[in-house]
Image 1 (cartoon, chains in turn blue, yellow):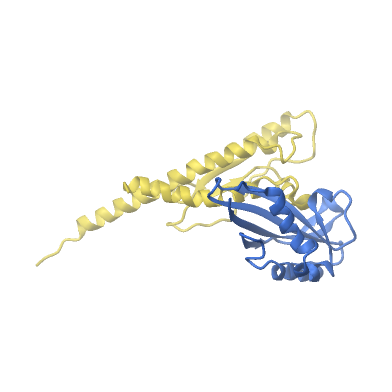
Image 2 (image 1 turned 90 degrees about the horizontal axis):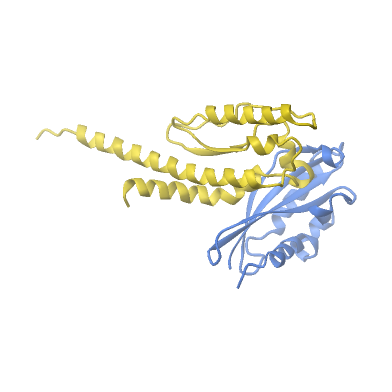
Length: 131
Length: 156
């Protein structure tokens, strides 16, 4: 079976966007794809950015994702940090069928001048699968 | 019975030298690939060309200080910015990475020499990021290349 990037990205996104495991995140923040950031929702929100995919076919494939958590300038990072903790809980290592989800680093605190000086942090994930 | 360990120590030193040489060769090969990918990308957007011209991926640690790569990267960024028709207000920048390796550690540094690379890596959820994604993509490859290089030098 060939790697279905679209299906895996959708599954990864849906963990927060629609699955029951992401309900606690949705209670605090909107969940969007990063390609819709030109029209961001109300703060706070989390945006998914897909990263590179490495690994040869039939070997272990590594799909990189980053969740970016944004909040309004002046709000501080308290809500962002709360949401990051909920994201960690939502992603059980084996939540995606035939994959292992490995959590990576959480970024430093960032002020994004390209998004109205919103505050942000990101959390990295790698999805391992053999296709 | 007297024992002379001198030959044993000489042999172990040679073994370590071969090991480090192999690791550095392997890391350097993978770094060359990573650098080529960064040169080829359009993810960062091009206004002056300084970012693309100053991408560098190189081995650090041991005798590898990165000084020559930093000098060439900085010069490339400076030349691109000063020669650009359009100015975006950015400048060439070279600063200490803050990375400190012990005598027995080797690494690879992926960087560029402008004062706006941090923004490119983070703004709009890393919309124009190149260094981070390239490192993610090659992380496993660097480990494998180091192992392959040392195996090669040790003849196994």
